[in-house]
Length: 320
Image (tube, rainbow, N blue to C red):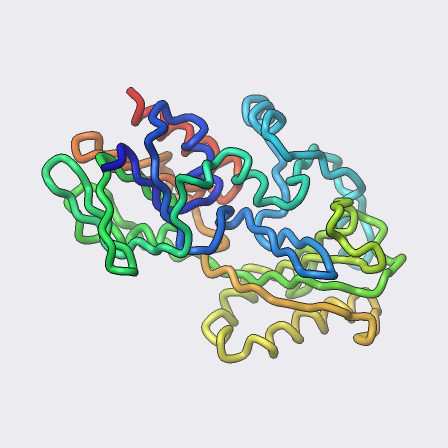
């Protein structure tokens, strides 16, 4: 029996592993690797795309020090601009990215040997003084304490039948789409990041500006993210109309920058069902009597700094 079982292997889990006094930990993650929304996609012959978390820009001095001390992290320099009929250079802020990809934020803190990947926990059962976790493969796992670091709706689904005092609130998380785009080398993209207005594309990251060794030097690599509204309006038809959505996003983006479709050498779309949420105005949940805690950025806002603050607080509460 493990002392602590953590469900989810994203940034919150990594922060917990850093701050928890207990090291006898097992982590369950439905994906094939760590990262959660701090995700990196490596495409052979093309390069690296941060198709989840774009960067970390600390607001507090304490979080800044935490990020600076992480292994495999570097600054992302360059101009960041807003396009709204004209180009406006945005106020400079310190931005950090992973040296090989933004899943480095998680990989630098989490113990991979403690993780069970491709393992979705489907049911939690409290047995007097410990927990039994049932996974999708029919296996059972035992732990003294359990911590959930999942998106809000997935959390609600797992705890809805548990008598732990957690108040389930209706707070639909909002989807968006991310497109990973490779173009023949283009001199157009001189800036590191673009905020776009009046478009279904709200953000463009110039992946080439991150100077990663796996990036194809003969290509310009871009990560596009859609507006929350476009994600909400199109997510239900995503699986059936994936190519249509991909082509619509890419087509509009190419029109904005007056780029011919023949310049495209790679394009791929990823749908994030749980991209954004409204904060629930509670920092964390803990039931010490039964040994269960819940955390995530969605408690107080969707930034990595919220995730760090909430997970750190929960670790402190569990350790005392």
